[in-house]
Amino acid sequence: MAAALASSRCCRRPSLLTIDRRRSSVARCALSGGKGNSFSWKECAISVALSVGLITVPPTFGWSAHAYPLEPVIPDISVLISGPPIKDPGALLRYALPIDNKAIREVQKPLEDITDSLKVSGVRALDSVERNVRQASRALTNGRSLILSGLAESKRANGEKTLDKLAVGLEELQRIIEDRNRNAVAPKQKELLNYVGTVEEDMVDGFPYEVPEEYNNMPLLKGRATVDMTVKIKDNPNVEDCVFRIVLDGYNAPVTSGNFVDLVERKFYDGMEIQRADGFVVQTGDPEGPAEGFIDPSTGKSRTIPLEIMVDGDKAPIYGETLESLYGHAFQELGLYKAQTKLPFNAFGTMAMAREEFDDNSASSQVFWLLKESELTPSNSNILDGRYSVFGYVTENEDFLADLKVGDVIESIQVVSGLDNLVNPSYKIVG
Image 1 (cartoon, rainbow, N blue to C red):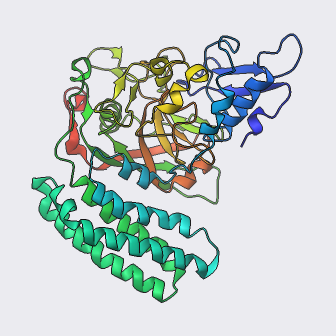
Image 2: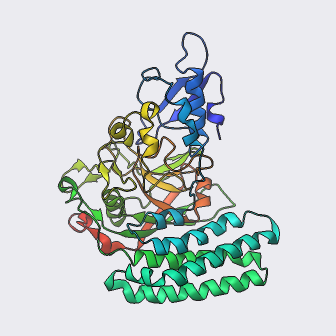
Image 3: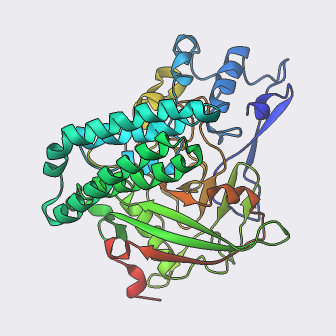
């Protein structure tokens, strides 16, 4: 994955910028020796360490490569290669819920760990899976009262029923293991984790914070929504029309998610082509004509939204600033890596907003899906987290994103659940 930095002459680093088909948004950085060298060998080592994680072609940085001393960076490079990262979109969404209930997390973790247990070849994996199941069952038995006490009162009845289903499902998984039926483990694991996720969502009581006043009148998604994106695949006989299921997380990105759902309800993306597909990202959202984003018909002006980043441990998102600018330069203080974002660029199919390179608050309608997943770097040890607003993950058929090409057509995007979480919907007012 470090191939993008392997050349001794130059590397191409496409930014995740808004698309303007009238000009190129590709920057170059020279890695060759001699007078024109813009990176020292130590800097190249840092670049390679960054590139082997989520990205192979990171966005342009917009600052001089010689502006900051390198000595503090080298001793701390181990922070970039510890792990392992969470790469499953479902797990990322479960851990991103605004809850604080240790008992349900103790049930969840061993069930998530089954994924790693199944990496062992043959039926030997089942011994490890059995330990995971016993741990989860014990945690559910011992922690049931604490889990029940964490349920929102209005959702308690549903939460109790789901816990009962979870207990029965754990017994069924134990029998699958006893029958040495390895192939049945992963589907049952998915079912059980869906139950866990439902219980955790039943612990969320209302929306947990106030959106800043300057953004409070925008379309806001106060909760989660699920959309299906149907894409017509051209020129690929192996792939027919594909439906991508996407979960949008308004708990951690209410402005960004609300803007997108509002555009979906306006049918803004229906009939639009895929406009970038380069092995790094799939991108769309640039409308026909001179505008690079959505023009609000009620004002005649482009509607833009702020950069929106939720940091783990914070009560509300940070608006209008990258974590790099907020915490100090990454290559000087490593502040970027110490701040953990709730929605990291870890999963294949991570969904985020594109924006102009030097304007953090210029996102409008252009979105992209990342075609990489974290391999070596832990969460937030890359140079995408904290620089672009992540607001969801593709949870079904994400692998087929890699088959999309420029010119493939989005037939429709439809909200299948969660539309009632959208407040201030502008599509109901105009157009």
